Amino acid sequence: MQSRYHEVYDGWVKDPEGFWAEAARDIDWFKPWDKVFDGDAGVYGRWFTGAECNTCHNALDRHVASGRADQVALIHDSAITGTIAKLTYAELLAEVNALASVLRDQGVGKGDRVILYMPMVAEAAVAMLACARLGAIHSVVFGGFAAKELATRIDDATPKLIVSASCGIEPGRVVAYKPLLDAAIELSAHRPETCIILQRLQLGCDLVAGRDIDYAETVGAARAAGRTVECVPVAATDPLYVLYTSGTTGQPKGVVRDNGGHMVALKWSMENEFGVKPGEVFWAASDVGWVVGHSYIVYAPLLHGCTTILFEGKPVGTPDAGTFWRVISEHGVVALFTAPTAFRAIKKEDPQGLFVPKYDLSKFRTLFLAGERADPETIKWAEQKLKVPVIDHWWQTETGHPISQNPVGLGILPVKYGSPCVPMPGFDVRVLDDAGHEVERGTLGNVVVKLPLPPGCLPTLWNADERFFNAYLTEFPGYYKTADAGFIDDDNYLFIMARTDDIINVAGHRLSTGGMEEVVAEHPDVAECAVIGIADAMKGQIPCGFIVLNSGVDRDVAIIEKEVVGLVRDRIGPVAAFKMVVTIKRLPKTRSGKILRGTMQKIADSEEWKMPATIDDPAILDEITEVLKARGIGVI
Ligand code: COA
Ligand code: AMP
Image 1 (cartoon, helix red, strand yellow):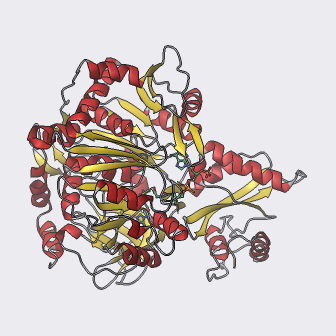
Image 2 (cartoon, protein in one colour):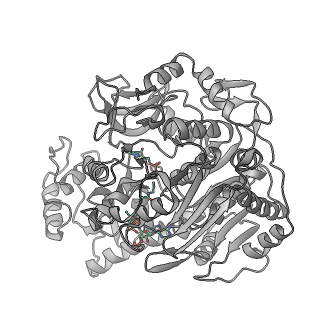
Image 3 (cartoon, helix red, strand yellow):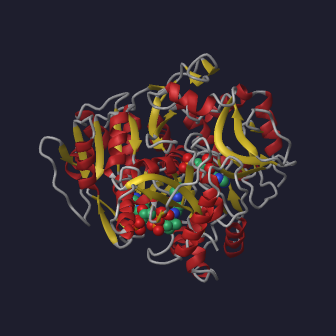
């Protein structure tokens, strides 16, 4: 099939508002918009101003009303507990109604924040939708974060209520969530009035009298009584959720997502970008704590009338490297979306792909990879073993849906390995030099998007318009700064090569090295430190900390390094995957005192590097090379 991409993209270029108004016809609105786009509203403009809608209505009620009541909406497949549970659209709506009733009993209403600190259980999606139903704003916090990170989010979002669970389950260990939740509440200045706690069979927990209520008991009672709550009309521009993501400091950024534009963009993406039809089974193997989980486990597939899979497990070890193929075959998945690191993990365990032919993958059509750069070797391996197109696409927590992709639904374009293909309608992507001038095709530079951002992207940061403006819109006036470096080739294909800030990408998880440095610096024996991301064959990057000890410290260096590792795990969480600390005598710096992190990273990754002209003392780089060599880190 000839791709319609160019025709569709040009259509958007000619009439962006007409394009999105047309896409918006696929959404039920309680009140139509006054303006498709109001350039005077918000920080850079707002979409669908004046309109009223409800995201839960569009994800559930409208499908139940239009004949999908008995279609499975959500499959909870837990490879880690060996259980599978299915909820039809009618059943999921009943669950959401029951929890929404309990939330309302606890005083949660439109505009209130609710933090969800949940493992990968169906109740996590139920809670997101119940908040949406009430017009409350959810903020999901990933389970791999420590109490301190949760506390930071509690203080920023000031939730009325928190929904959590007794435990999460990681291979080989049960993660007790409740002590982390209690510690976070203890650490935070803001105190939620109520916590609703889901007790899991693997590990129960005590409830705090006067604050905690039992999920099963209260929601069960509401369910048994058949209680329902009407969908609360909200403005299209009202926030649906706040999702915190790493910024350049330890203070995470609260990315705001609205209701109206978000629904329009996600619904459009399912058919046109992912090539999936209503009624089909779509699986995003991510976590509800990340943006991929928000957009493509919960909202997009449900808005589109698909069956979605919420998978609790890992690509390997639960129980083996055939788990993904088992899920695809057992549930008739047509499209899988995951991070390249998952495939690198599978390839490492089963390089020959021996597990693949054991399963019937006849319904499986497309593999989508995002979250980090997809290395050509991994793409080629997946293509060979699965015999389906492998689509790399590029986006960010901030954009909520793909900026660039090979648009399968519009007709696939030729694949170029290493490129997440072409910009999607809504995104006018340019590459600028540091002075803000557009560079020539093929030249590396700052990847930016011409304003306004399309529907579905962040309108601002939670309670922080100025931070939003300063972080994203000031460096290149008129453009949104993606903080990615890359280039565009002669065929308009994008190549995303690296971040331009201190963010690293560890197993598809976005982490701030600046945030880690803040924690490392807290160790009493550490005088100075630097954290860099170094290349890792499986996780893409892993953090490596360099510490300089205070003069006079004579404790065992190995013990100090272990303590620093423990400190980061304790403060940020296991997800930081911070396991490597190297003690050095001095940090390499410029004469003006800036730490030369980029050069350290090149040394560790055995990349070519030039002696920075501004370096204060070149001998320090030799010292670092020696220490890394001796430790067998990075340098070959
Ligand atoms: N709750 C508690 N702890 C968690 C957690 C959660 N939800 N998720 C991860 N962790 C822990 C892990 O148990 C691990 O702890 P450990 O140091 O005690 O081993 C640590 O955080 C690091 O996790 P991770 O980086 O995921 O490494 P891993 O070795 O457990 O798994 C992969 C590696 C590649 C299998 C895994 O990262 C994966 O499946 N990635 C898929 C990609 C993905 O989901 N990306 C998200 C964005 S699309
Ligand atoms: P997150 O906000 O966690 O989704 O991370 C977004 C960042 O991940 C982007 O800014 C990129 O640096 C990186 N990223 C995501 N997808 C891709 C991709 N397909 N290719 C290269 N980098 C990617």
